[in-house]
Amino acid sequence: MKLIKKLGIIAIGAVLMAGCTPKDATTRSSTESTAAESSATESGKDESKAENTDKDLKKIGVIQLVEHKSLDIIYNSFKDELKNLGYIDGENVKITFQNAQGDMSNITSIVQGFEGDKQDVVVGIATPVAQGAMSLTKSTPVVFSAVTDPIGAGILTDMNAPDKGMTGTSDAVQIDKIMDLALQISPDVKKVGFIYNPGEDNSVTNLGLLENYAKEKNLELETVSISTSADLQTAAATLFEKVDMIFVSNDNTVAEAMPILTSEAIKAKKPIYVGADSMVMDGGLATVGIDYTDLGKETAKMVDEIIKGKSVEEIPVKVFKDDLFIYVNTDTAAALGIEIPESIRTDKKFVEIK
Ligand code: TRP
Image 1 (cartoon, rainbow, N blue to C red):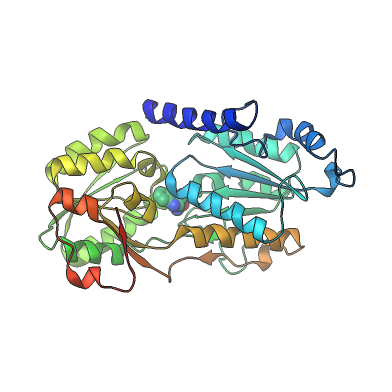
Image 2: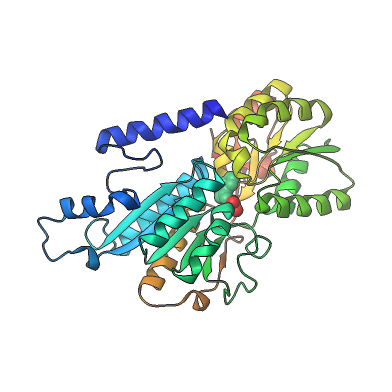
């Protein structure tokens, strides 16, 4: 993980250097400054628009758990949709983006910063962030994004009338459909390996679903838990020796180091099935799942509704589970010597990723 963290920071640094002077390693671009910097940025930017005082700008604070492909896709489509809805950063809205670098204590301090800085809405991307933002709901409406199991995570008890101060979007993972696809492509599988971070409630929910599936289909299940992505390579190498395939759901800790898991799969010559399109982009063999750009857009629409005066309880959670695609990485298939059946390749929902 050390290496991955460093690469992440270097990548953020490069973006920052192109745009402005970095003050905080977690800040992503010049228009998305930290809470502490915001007044300076705004006054500098708005000189030509005297009518725009700080008070006119609606404030949207965003907390992303960590950098991985899927969360980046979500945040980018969220921002694009806000723009479509007429929110121009620096003109009529101030978007403050914070990356918690996968660290719970960072989430706590970012939440405190947003509390002090009185955001109009706070957006939390991924389950641990939504959980960490619970304390904010007394003062600020919170919209969560891509929380797999909001009830299991304890952030509400009623999906239709969210009752704990936050609503948002959910990416319920289609464990049965993914496993059906896995068994169709790899019919000889008897023993399935599962790697997850038990600190992520989203993964705990998915493991429960996988256990049910395995029982039903008489599959043996072997699980390995990791607490940071630094553990992933060893976990994968040892697990591949014992199982016929590995499945990982949408676990943020795994997603962060997905390319490492891909190379272990190719070394072991055993399939790796995954819980998100982004993980197929990172070399996972296949999944059945949603297009996360839709989820990012919907998150923006909810923020718009709240800014226009709706309350959290009036906005039901939107679960993305219906418009599903079959994502297959055909380079990985070739590297593993796996044939993708014709019936899958010709499916209307088939998306080839190379
Ligand atoms: N659903 C995850 C959560 O609840 C977040 C997430 C979205 C994710 N897309 C992903 C995790 C892709 C791993 C891979 O925290």
